[in-house]
Amino acid sequence: MTKAKNERSYIRMLLAIAIPMMVQNGISNFVNLLDNLMIGKVGTNALSGVAIANQLMFVFFLVIFGATAGAGIFTAQYKGNGDNEGIRYTFRFKIVFNTLLAAVCTCVLLMLAPTLINLFLLGEGDPADAAETLKIGISYMRIILISLVPVGLTQAYAGTLRDLGSTRVPMYASICAILVNLVGNWLLIYGKLGLPALGADGAAIATVISRFVELAILIIYTGRHSKMFPFIKGAFKNFKVPVDLVGKFILKSLPLMLNETLWSLGMTVINQSYSYRSLDAVAAMNIQSTIWNVMGVSFLAMGEAVGIMMGHILGSGELDTARQKADTMRWFTVACGVFFAAIMAAISPFFPLLYNTSDEIRSLASGFILIAACAMPFVAYTHASYFIIRSGGNTLITVLFDSIYTWAIAVSAAFFMSRYTDLSVTWMLAVVNGLEVIKCFIAFLFVRSGMWVKNLVKAN
Image (cartoon, rainbow, N blue to C red):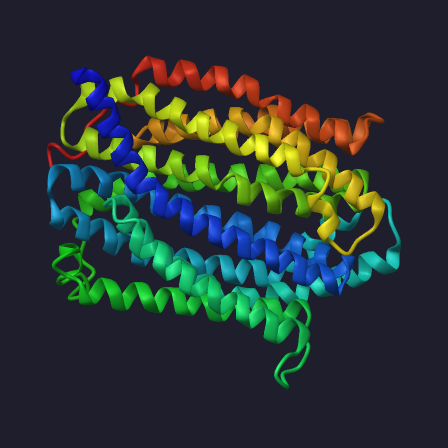
């Protein structure tokens, strides 16, 4: 009975962290769905252009996520150890590192956007449509780049609060930003209330404004609640971080940055391989990824919450407890994945009908959604496993588990099938998603080994 109560206690703590993130991500992705529908009403070329630009932005988001997560491993363990000074050091590191990284990415994407977007437009299709899609994608990208530094700073604030287990504040900030984005889209895409109809550019402007709003809320709220967040006291008196800690943070951040960069680039190459088979696949994949993001919020948030909780447990020195709770938390995450996968499969024939596009693209998207739904429980398992492994600071192992696997197995398969076989793009997607089973087996071995069970902050 005591053991059962203990298990329920950990599940309740897990849900307390995960539910605000689910709400935040759910609302965000639902609004992204509405964004897609709004842009889709402009036309298929606008939908494809924005989708390609956002695929490149996806790489940036994961790079920033990796940079924040490296120091975040220490933040979570400092929390378990009750060390506010340590938390303050990780926060300062995130602020400086993310700002520099965002500035570099802005310059790189500004120069390379035309070339990168054009890589997705090499498949079969009307050259005139490809040219218009390229023009829309470049214009959208140049506007959205204004938001990269604010996004980096937002991740420093929001990532720190989440690592401390305070997931509600980032949720509220995100919801406000989402509402601003939604209203801005309505005003600027279609030209309401006397404003010009800017199409995809209007969507980009609305997104940029919303990013600044989100950052402002986090800065103001955190600053005014220093009793709740004592790390913020004196955080900006200087940006001093002990050299030995900087070295430790970088040693954990760089592998995670490398992992997130390689993984996101791998996913970009996979999507480019689908587009190589057919330009229709670009629009169809955008439809599929939109509903995937909405339905995947449960296991995605749960996986991140698992990592935060495991960090707190490891930081407090309860190493045996961490090992015991890993499987419970992981299978609970899978259960969430199964539930939402069933919903996703059920709506797969109907969801693409919401888009103003061709019957061919709708049919392709329906198949894509069904395949993704079948893969969701397996992805949930590997996602939770990734955060468990990462919680103990095994960042090099996470690179092997995540990005090296992606390039060696998934990218190779997609590239080979697109260039050297006659398989349809639907079968290509099915094969690539089916390979997730191999990753589940690898995840089982890594977590079972216990190599991640480490306290990183005991000596600090």
